Image (cartoon, rainbow over all chains, first blue to last red; front, side, top):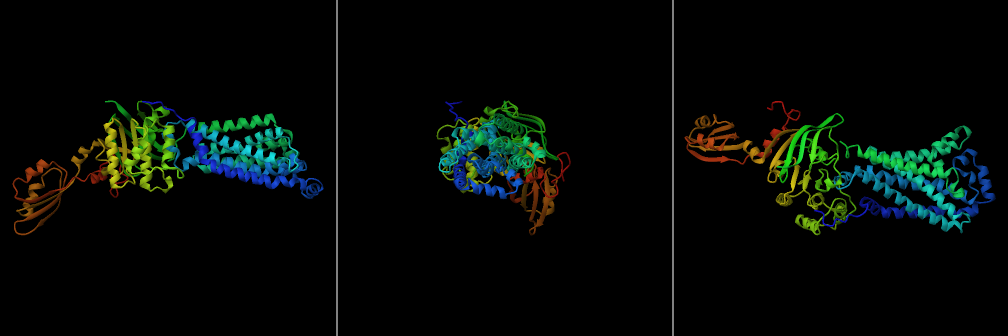
Length: 271
Length: 315
């Protein structure tokens, strides 16, 4: 009955990556452009100009934007890229990918036919989560290479080893929006559920961090902000924070496990 | 004979809406079983339950000897499925789509996809978004048939196909039956599957109102009868009216000593000829039984009957 059935390894993951490689490349270019736009400004901003700019800004704004370290190369890279535009753009990719993985596929009516073939629901969630991880990991490598390439010319003075750790921690942070979106889609059955869940995690984490920066009595909010876990310790300057790394990794795994659980127990395709 | 599908008391509710209200049927290996019903009768729901895409609210289901709920991917590799609302990826050629499905279901014999595609006149190298509805349906059929599964579950397989392709599809069903494959088809028109199906279940409002062979359905269906005889219409009517299954529609006097009669007839033809034995018949037309109308009556989609339950008397 089975004449030398050589099944490809991880067929669903391979397909998910192949289907999105064009858009992955476009995102890589976008991220590189943002880096190329911001990082070279550092030499002209460091020094008295920056001091004057910071002095002119309200203190609340500086702490909300985590700009208090902006006068150093590492602080500048984190505040302008990893803490802001880089975070927003990477989160958008992760959330979009996660929301499409199950919820979007189901919205388009494609999930039904896939599940009627020789796959399990667990396999669908896991392979597509893996595709999400690989896609984001590729973009993080592009970011790493981009920052490293600009490190000398932009006089940032970053240590490549520390930067690896910072990017790894950053990867787990943006991935969290993606796995939350995947979970939302797997539980709710629609892309919009996924997008909402992912945005809640990403934007919510950002807001809790910004509010927590506003003073002693609001600092407790940091404890609930994945954004703060990942970036609060100034990883571009100081390297990995192991408890943050494990916390973020654990939460990602938990979201994927919950997505498996949610998809396994419900009807697909709705009423 | 071994049953490939066994369904007992299958019920499924979506919130308050009862899509299936307890249906029973079985499909013996190697046979072709059709389910007929209007849109919303529960055909798609029943098929989705067999594939564990949705889960029954109540009842027992066995497919290829296993509860689909517990069946692994190995069982689904032995099934070919065509969804009723077929959705396909848009930016992908048919060939790549089939490669992907072969990778997750397979194994597909070399050349099998091309063979099916040429049989259906389908181009595999065009992007699916550029294909017409009929051609997309053909892609759906190819992915269901290509791994020669033991069981084919096809929801509205002929939808979107032109008459020529419908005939080709019937040929594919015939071939599959010849190879010992089992088929479960659905349609809202009996005409589309009457040539293919051994047995037919008629589904209405989530209940099976009748299971029968096509011959049985045809035997019970009403035919239109027209008789022209060399007698006055009253005598003609008197001769035929006592016949069981005859419903008089009209009589007409067409001249001195010539009468015409129109009726609907669902009784035995022998009895009809017997009743006409004493009459000088000039012309007789007994039309093919209208299966479509017979089914329509069974599932009560005639105006005003939509809400009737199976147990209630129908007008």
